[in-house]
Image (cartoon, rainbow, N blue to C red; front, side):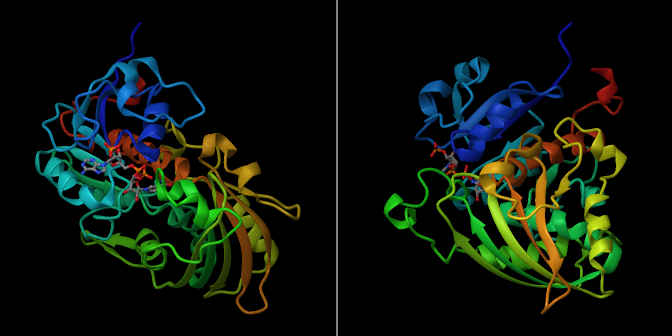
Length: 356
Ligand code: NAP
């Protein structure tokens, strides 16, 4: 029997993140991909001709046959995933939200808007209550480096209260989209600047770890200092983190907090949720992007080298997949939580995952 699924559209479907959406939606148990949109350059062609397909999996047949539309054109779907370039995402996403659609965005434009949830389902699912049922709106997926960092900080923040964070990132080239950083800049090299990235990492975790009360998010009192670099790795961002807490954690307590971290039950049961969102490796020399970015379908953040820090309390290294956990996979998880919480307009209130 054909399962009843919710029709969804993808904006920016031809880009790096858009292609991950297409791959992940091909066999999604709750969502059916029915519209693909991109720039006027790609519109009017079947997706298989419009896209320069760069995924290791074959282009899904059904998606390949879809005709690409222009982002901004009228849509029948009430749930829209956006992988649009930030240069154009702001207005286009806001227009769809005004039309009563729920837009789950990967772009930076609306992340810090007070009534817009900046969501990591395992970390701050309650922030989704900023969205009124039936009205549509915008839900944002944090910056790809912020997601890994905020997930790793969450258990430490809950247990000891994180006060200060220093983070240095080693970010993959796929984070810059396609064609991205010129090969002559990145091969045999490290580029110690990514435009706008440090500002995002220094502000977004405060909102994500903040408390929702009185209809607004009160940012967490955490001071962050970020240095972001681009390195010649294809996928998977590495982050070297040191943390000072309000209450000094012993190493064993910190290990216990990270390895015992479990998301709320409503999130753990979602189709894109990893079995455990954080893995703490005890052995030395890891995590590494090539070995660990694919952990749990690219949805798990791997932490290692947890040890005492002579300057702050703790230090560790993490690896997170930037286009999966940090973009399309994380956004799908946000969409799944929104659907489960009745935030997708036009979906009858009685719809529950149990019906499929
Ligand atoms: P990308 O490869 O450059 O893809 C950009 C997409 O936007 C393409 O589908 C492109 O369509 C479309 N687009 C560009 N100009 C447009 C216009 N004028 N009108 C309509 N559509 C237009 O970028 P990406 O890496 O996939 O990133 C997509 C978004 O996700 C960005 O906002 C980025 O900051 C964010 N993000 C990326 C990552 C990552 O790891 N890559 C992680 C987290 C968040 P055409 O092909 O037709 O030009």
